[in-house]
Length: 591
Image (cartoon, rainbow, N blue to C red; front, side, top):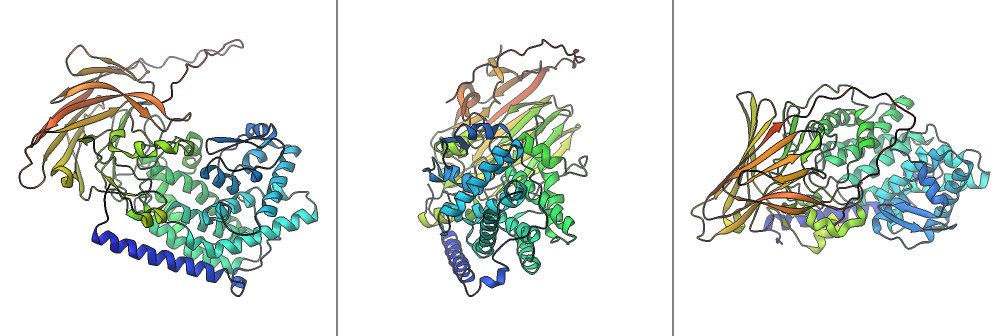
């Protein structure tokens, strides 16, 4: 744990003042005397219906029809009733329920029964939540609900009776008025952008809100400029946030075009930066590297947003603002974290993975970080954020970052943020056709006066990766005591690993017919259990290679990974037959 420094206490005081100012402004602007500023309180006419880019699954309707309502990894039994009468199994489940993102599944079902159930649930929500408060009226949840209702207006409004239409129109208008003031109360980061995206989308799609649109678009543009970095990354350093934001930004841009209105300049500029950044963070197996809150891969969402990239051949040269480094040679891709955590106000999901990396060869991932577990597995969050869950060095079983426990700060951020390392540097060079990355951080200075440096060299063909991990005193002389350290190499799920014929060696088989040999000097190689938290089925047991030794003053460990067998050439596709069957999948172990 770490206490706040004097500078951070001053920053916290500023955050508290800003939070109080935003809350006061939101309360004032929601008063009856000022609500007129947000246009008509009834959304009685929709000009356009935006596209929902998130993948719809019609089978969800079958589950709901059977009385099962599954959200955020948890399933509630509603039988023939309404989900709004239940005690939510988790806060995440409640937020997804009140956000109505599940409407897309009922819309995709395309049946009269699904349409009737969707309308019934929406009217039940209106009846039970006229009084504002709780999870249902959180600004980000209200924003997601507005986006969902407007995007699926055809499902809700087509052919309904006048009384139901009036109830929905009145509720839409009331939610817009509420959000126009309440977005100021949203925690910093992704949630605030959701709220402002919904506000702009509503003003675009609902008639008689053109005057409000100009003000909302100005606020939205300013928030984009503040949160989207010059290289296209997000200020939270979570690469998965980019995909989520693009799923909302892209339809919003289409709505501006459909209305013949100019979007705020920040919107198309941000989209143009974000799409290459998503590609930059993508490994050869198609997944986004698991850093700083990135959880379960969403290949459908990723494929959707990348389909809008008009220049897919352009490769981002560097991501200096986001502080990630990509090395690529041959079919091998390596992505490393070369940055400090984000600011405290937005570091509630950040991980202590400084100098960690992920690596793929061809279409197979080899080394991956643990990732972030889903909302139903929150008890694993602390472990997933630790340095030991990343492919990097961990000194004395302590993380290179420290949790900051402060009740006020946690209430603002939503979770304990992390701080340290303060200084992280990196430089890239080329030699012999290969590419070299040299990184260092001071995360262990206060704990042990040691600096961790890591040098990675990816050879020209991509068939060999050399690494040097080094601990050395930061200032003066190191204390005369041995400190154990461990360098973790977490294997991707389903990688086969066997001890090599030589000491401190192992052979890795990714499953594509290739074989990679790992070898180390300066530390003892051990094979230990690991956990992959970002699996679709929840955290699962995997394997890691760990190099263990003790440091007295200065220590250096050299290691290499070399492809000793290449995968066979692809075979021509076999003709399809009617009676071909697939073998049953192997059972998967969970922790």
